[in-house]
Image (cartoon, rainbow, N blue to C red):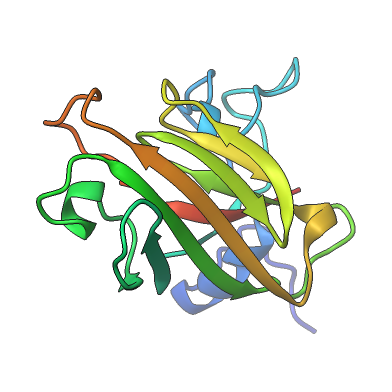
Length: 185
């Protein structure tokens, strides 16, 4: 008969297998989250509390970008990319950014899906599967929209963006930061 082991510690291989089962502990996390990453924590939560991680999928590409103010063909681009990079030599205009993607799999009933823009310069309208989600004001560089009720098997995100010379031309314009899907509990 074996004696019980009081001080059991997992081997390196066992620890790797156990990691997904151990919730993340946030230590030294900021108490005021960035607006693009969610809402303030409920009272009583903060440093040292357990929270489920956010699952993030970046919508890098391919994006179809079509100028709306001139007769030019659509471009296929990978984001993030500034207006100045996509439209070389152009410092203003209107364009439609279009990205298709499939519904995230294995969603549970308590999970919600958001589209998060982490770097926008310009004014924009955001549509998802033919539904207007809302606008992004020119003074805002980050925005998020919940898309859970509009999700389908095959989805299409359309951003109509206006960028003009009156904005600081030494700073990137357009969708210059990452665009991502976030799955939140």
